[in-house]
Image (cartoon, rainbow, N blue to C red):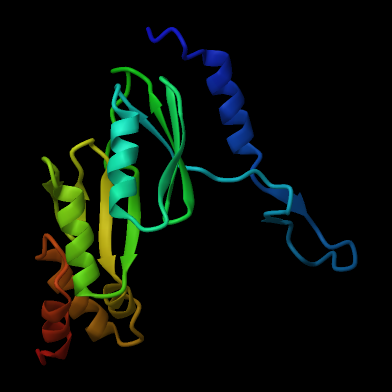
Amino acid sequence: MFPLLRLDVLAALAVSAATLFVTYSDPEETSKPVTTRPTATSPTLTPFLWFESNAEEAAKFYCSIFPNSKVTKSTPQLVEFTLNGRSFMALNGGPHYRLTAAYSTFVACEDQAEVDRYWDALLAGGGKPTQCGWLEDRFGVSWQIIPKRLMELLEHRDAATRKRATDAMMKMIKIDVAELERAVAAKR
């Protein structure tokens, strides 16, 4: 067992995560349903990644890829860093848990050049491409490298356009914007 990892700390983190939103209702409008809304005092949401022992190496790798990124704090167990201004934390937690594709980081790219740049950089050193714009980097973290154009096509008002875009995407490993455009322009 990893000696610095305590179950009471994990329990406290779980309780904090469960209280992210404050419930409110408008007393003037009793017909409105009770909903949740973040407040100015809501906790900050920070993705927290578990690595066996190379959290700092992974953080430095990611910071070398994305602009406006840096390691902000590093201890033997915990690394804090920002990627394009968004906070992340990484733990050297030992071999007890493995990262899976159940968690991924979505990178919305402006164009094909940006898709290509992030795709190639994240695969460097032993990453594995999967399908539909997903990849797993050499540390086991899953990423979705997605051009904004794909999202526009998948949300298009025309059902036939959405279907052609979806069908084309399902055949791709890395998303190819030009191929998507050809697919949605095709008449079937």
